[in-house]
Image (cartoon, rainbow, N blue to C red):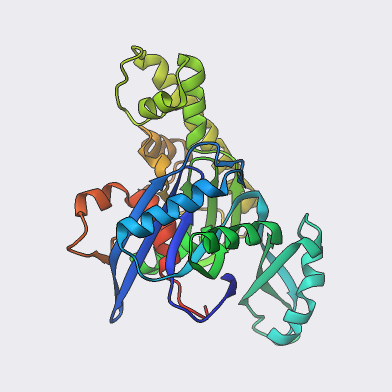
Length: 353
């Protein structure tokens, strides 16, 4: 669901708090081929709590990747996420699309905590009543702060590219899932755990019913390791990734305790979202979790999550049904698969969606 779009080809640019990811796909019949993918780190102060503090660092990362990957396309789909965006499924009186377009601003005022003049609004009708005139219809409402959208547009422009689409990253993840997996009958949760933010999108038979953003992620592990072992940020990042450092011997038992504590905090937030979903839905059971994001590499997280929540957890593979071009290094691409999901979902977008 783009917040605005133009009629141009699409290049997926995912601007995260830890790195920028860029993906380019080629459509071959009814399938896709990955022809370019790259990731460039940005310094930890470039984005703080979802706020862009150093746009120059992000612009440089994008430009470096474009040059490194030899990309000629200039039209970009990028994503907004976190506290600057609100996604809600709302009931509205039955009406046609043109009537809803006229009344959605008033409907939105009841559900969003922002000043209505400070946001761009988008919507999509999910279902209409089976009996005309007798019920309400379900609508997905998206409200994103204009300031954040303009900020993203400016970064893309400064990088020498054109903004074609800005959408919600949880929906980009859903795009990626739907291309790579057969129709899932039942209720599933798509969870992406990034450096600072975790997104949760709960789908019932392919339809989004709850989307939430929570300020927790991989940086929580890094901060705890840095604090408890008195390390520099860069050293704590290496320890988190399972690499050795020369400055200090790391107590593995204490490190395991940090992993368990932060993982427990993340799982508790997921459980709260699941409880909220169950309280407002006729569905009691979440059948499966598909997990992505750099955080899934944390030792034991996937298994611990499945055990504590009592729900099967599978790592989402963005290349399950997408061929990887022979010119790309397959092992390196597969190693970055969990971080690529949103960029791939963005690259799947088509003009006019």
